[in-house]
Image 1: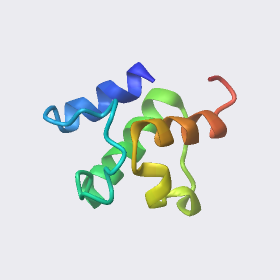
Image 2: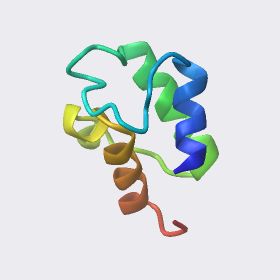
Image 3: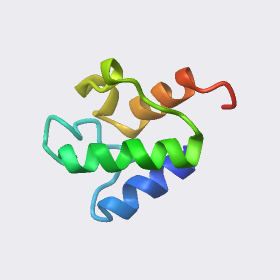
Length: 76
């Protein structure tokens, strides 16, 4: 989780990603951020997120995103 938080905080240092659960709803993350996140997650965790998993529910909080990464990864 710490690695994911670092990626997110590097993108938007002014956001409290540990507690924010409206990243998509409040437009904290935009489409460019999502593309960047997909690349960073693939590089950091070795997980490719399928298109059908790119949903607001999976990206609305760091916790939801980490749960998705964990579900798709064999190593976490």
